[in-house]
Image 1 (cartoon, rainbow, N blue to C red):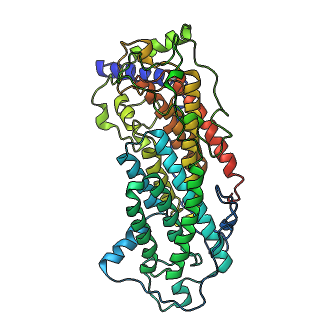
Image 2 (image 1 turned 180 degrees about the vertical axis):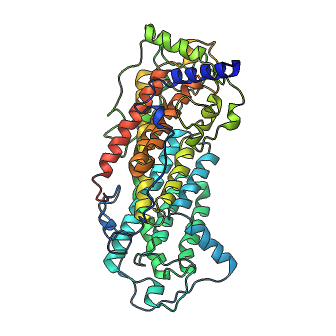
Image 3 (image 1 turned 90 degrees about the vertical axis):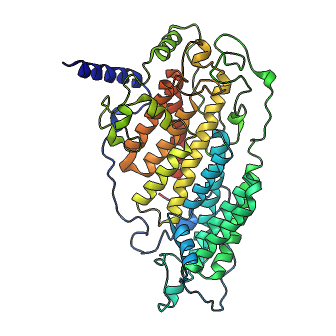
Length: 499
């Protein structure tokens, strides 16, 4: 056996040791087939119309989809003709990309990045946004099939359109309802940019008339409906406890407990989001519902073994393997313990707040499963995934600040880390919990890709240990906690009338 080959086998064994036990789904499941069924899911079987019963699906802040039903559309004839100039056609193309909520999720992620949001504020933003979009979509669908107004080109086949005519009634416009809801929530969250959201909502709604697939009254009713839904969501947000104050004097002291005064790889300071575990949840009864058992005691053999594991893990022991590692495609790691593998690259791939990971993946799967043309299904997916991320984070932070476990480099300051050690307790891992929750929901929504999403959660959890910033117990417990939250979200979805 050559020296290089022997070295490669050693690296594989190291990786096997690092992955052992992290998460319920083995990393062996990570890199199998991600083929999916490509059946067109945009229309209801047999009817040819998109989800004619979606107006009865269970809502989050509205009592029902019928609560805000707008008055009947005007009986007088309205003109509608597709635009032919380049500028309006560019707007049509921009807002017609993906589901109605696609651009708004994109915009919200840009806003959280610009604001420097951490997980608490970022996941709260995405959940509020997508709850508003979902409820507005269900309310729009209720009215659409209550009034059954034909689309312009359906009523007058001589009319041309810039895009295919959607297989749903015209009134009210779901793009307008989505825009009104999204703009209202984002204006509340980012008040300095409120005018830009209003302008974007106007353009999004108007693009449907410019496309020739809606009437002006469809837009007016949709925008008004969305704005009413946004007001309900903002009222919920104002009572979610996110403005709770933390008393630094309440930080406990003792062996093995986190403290801003202990050594760490970042400057000392107050903990990040210390009250997040008390915020109101969407599916859980409270952040403590699934609180895990305690971490290893600070003077236990288990803790000593974890400290040694973190201290001696050979981070990036085989340089240059990152040249062959493609994090976007698990086929780059076709079987467990095979190269290419770069622990550092995996660490940095999962380093950002995780809506930057699951957001693009969700958008891609909606496209691949043909759900981008099904507004109720798409809005439901965005809402369920973002709620799982938020509720899992609340549950994780509740446990963090219940146990106050010190970080690895607070137990042993000689431990080096790949990432800065965040000023929050170790147990459980927030990254592991957040992606554990979202991956569980994504696997349920896109079952042909279940192994892909579940393996992402496993690899992400392990990456926190490879980075040197979490103990194994924090990673394992975090992903398990997230999965329990995800299962609770799935159970709620099974009762929403969409199954």
